[in-house]
Length: 200
Image (cartoon, rainbow, N blue to C red; front, side, top):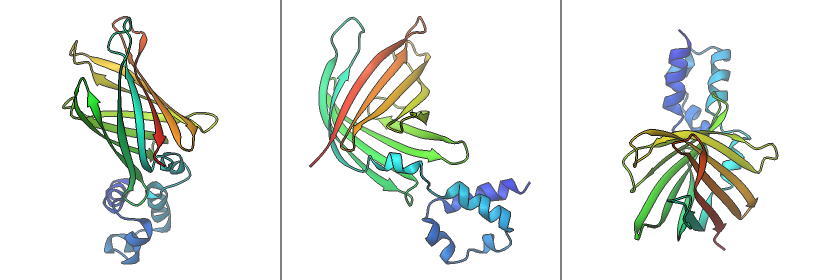
């Protein structure tokens, strides 16, 4: 039963940097035993894994290739993206702006690392849909990328489809995003490729 108030308190305090959260000695923490305090601090504190997503922070330009039909050439467009830390270095929020099918496009993402689940997390919303996509990811062996997996609703079939996204850092100032979807035969097909370069 001790885990329930521990999780609730950790969730409440996650909105503030660690030093600030305990500077005022909140009453809820006074009766907590050392083991509970240590577990909570470990769960809520940014760690080494957060440094990889911290590389995103800044302003970028990107080129995008979208594959609407595997047998046809991709549709190409360009845009900008801004990344910034939020909630005391626990998450990175991004705002993407460009065009989609000739219309203004805007998307918002959140990247983080879940210390309890031991994997990266990503959420995505944009003005080309009304849902929220959620994915979890694992880092590559060389530490130069993250592979995400999740699912989304296919607007054509109305059915849920498995998706995969591979992030590869080409340098500290350039990264590639390759996304795939599962077709009716259960085969992964490319959906888009983005190459982003940091603004100088």
